[in-house]
Amino acid sequence: MSRLLLLVVIAAVVYRLIRSYRKNMPQQDNPVVEDMVRCAHCGVHLPRSESILAGGNYFCGAEHRDAYRK
Figure 1 (cartoon, rainbow, N blue to C red):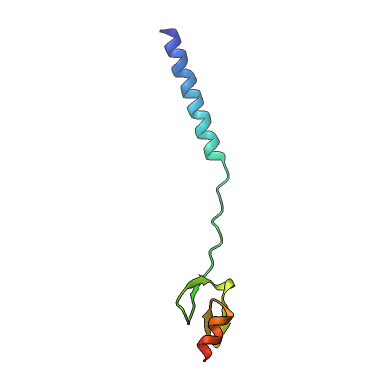
Figure 2: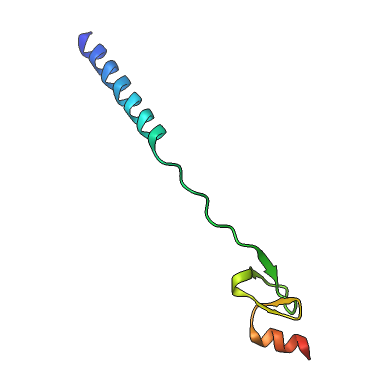
């Protein structure tokens, strides 16, 4: 009976240590969110930083920019 009580006490201590460790962990920062834009020629969505802006429209590449102008 004393062994069972000892195991319960050890389990409770381990549980509390884990809880306090998880509470003290630093929170992860949210990843930077970037606006998505749509290619005016093909309709593919891509991050604004990877797009080409021409004439107020966004394009996924120089080929689509040129094809849209024709």
